[in-house]
Amino acid sequence: MNLSITATTPLIGAITLPGDKSLSHRAALFASMAEGTSTVQRFLVSGVTHAMLRSLTALGIEWKLEGDTLTVTGKGITGFNPPAESLNCGNSATTIRMLAGALAASGTPGVLDGSEGLRCRPMDRIIEPLAEMNVPLTSSNNCAPLTMTERNAATKLKATNYKLPVASAQVKSCLILAALDADGTTTLQEPGPSRDHTERMLSAMGAAITTEAPYTVKVEPLSKPLSPLDITLPGDISSAAFMLVAAAIVPGSELTIRDVGINPTRTGIIDVLREMGSEIIILNKRVSYGEQVGDITLKAAPLKAIEVSGDTVVRMIDEFPVFSIAATYAEGTTVVREAEELRHKESDRITILCNELKKLGVELEEYQDGFAIKGGTIKGGECESHGDHRLAMSLTLAGLQSPNPVTVQNAEILNESFPEFATNLEKLGCRM
Ligand code: S3P
Image (cartoon, rainbow, N blue to C red; front, top):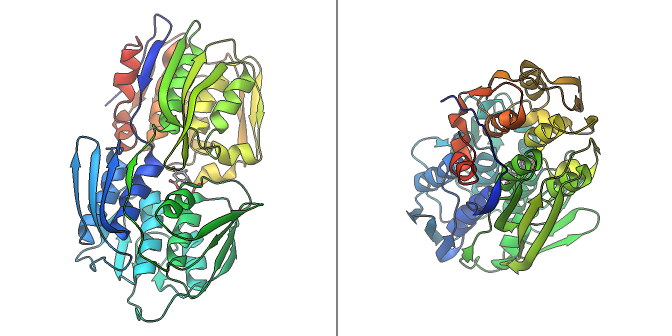
């Protein structure tokens, strides 16, 4: 599918978006590890969450999806059956890394695999710390496929004290899950504020997890079964980011997105759009099942260039493709530094992003750890998603105000995380 967008009028209106991807992954997996039946409303139904659900089926877990309500029958932390075939985690790094932790805790043998793209993502970041905990997980090249061999279920894993070299919620979550079956307290320290949904959700289910400054998590082994969930998930701020940037770059726009998750580990995109000049207010703030939620309203105003580095990078780690489009329409040169981790996402979101923007005429400079984008230089043209859902959606938005149309090839990959992308933009008056 090729995708192009035009906006002849400002984007005005109020929308509600599907549930958060990170929370949907966690809710499905943790529910399967609880004892009893969980209900998860506003579950994100998309390519990557189906990868998780498919893997849970292969592990002998029963679940039912009616609309966006997911019901899961959990069998406890050791309730997985060894899968008959390798688990197909599709394109989802969250699925493979969190399942590795769950299989470690349950002592279930199996092979974890996925798409060609997933096979290129680094897995040494989980293999090495899991090895310190005596988890028998191996790979021939530090990438998927990963093989978990059987271990004596009577022997607990070794509690560890581990410093993550890179802030990563996927790695942290994998190790937290393994630590639920360790022989003592596991301490994990990160160099930055990665999303803390795992800590919040597992604590709500009865796990003993505490957080301490700076960015340190302590996990006790489970002393009682996890309780099932009865939860309504908030909208995904990472999907909201596409709508917010779209409204930010079309003059006169005023957009409200209701019921969005505003966990502070995820709101870097709001901070940077505000700093660039967009007027953003968050109303109706509340806490729902341990997660902050609110209604976000953005009023378009001229955007100016900014610099982004440090903790803000972690707090908007998935938003750089769409942020680069805001930078393309800002006055001045926007600089991103200390963001080398972007090279390890669904695509190399530094080189590939820069190359695709260059195809559209954008003047930029690439750095090993980021990029600098000169605003006001876009011309339009054809570009390619490279199998990266966020690149597909971001590049599509590049066409909103470009002198010539932008066409994104192979854009159907956006169904991995945000199948309602086009319908929501159409609701706001865009033509797709
Ligand atoms: C995710 C964590 C992030 C993010 C990914 C989802 C999660 O990765 O990029 O899309 O659900 O834990 P890292 O925190 O591992 O960088």
